[in-house]
Length: 156
Ligand SMILES: Nc1ncnc2c1ncn2[C@@H]1O[C@H](COP(=O)(O)OP(=O)(O)O)[C@@H](O)[C@H]1O
Ligand SMILES: [Mg+2]
Image (cartoon, rainbow, N blue to C red; front, side, top):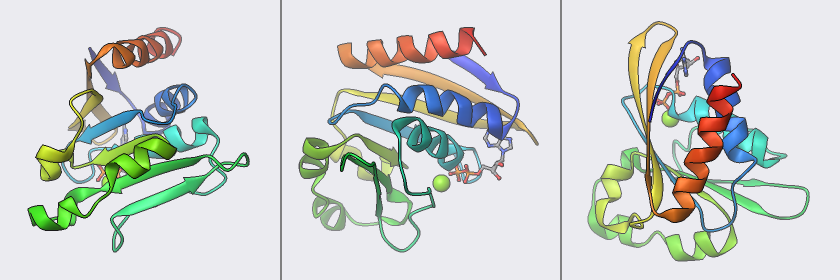
């Protein structure tokens, strides 16, 4: 499924709708060049999920953890800086997935570690304020989440 977002706010709004539907164990993979809009989308997701923490790019640490008032956690990983497989293997994805949803920027850097079932979103820079977002679901749960997004786009 394909969508053209015309502003950062619009990208965030779609994220809010997705975030509201996320559960522990859900994996969202975010692809696209620097500045394509991945973290902007994460801001919306975290907001919709109910985070009490604000989103920042995990620059020095690999994973940011956002909290919700009910103690639930949302994991935000940026694998951009990962340049070795052993380093990647130290990431305990299973531990994270048991506790909350996981959002991964640059999933291609940790290729073998990403679960087979996930929602993939690919961002492409079109213009100053326009981004193409390509959504792809892998697995039944993610067909469901794709439905949530389709619904959000219909009402946007
Ligand atoms: N339609 C859009 N969707 C998302 N971001 C946009 C859009 N138009 C402009 N931008 C801007 O592009 C930049 C995207 O940065 P960011 O989300 O950090 O990208 P990434 O995490 O992919 O490197 C932000 O400065 C944002 O305001
Ligand atoms: Mg980013």
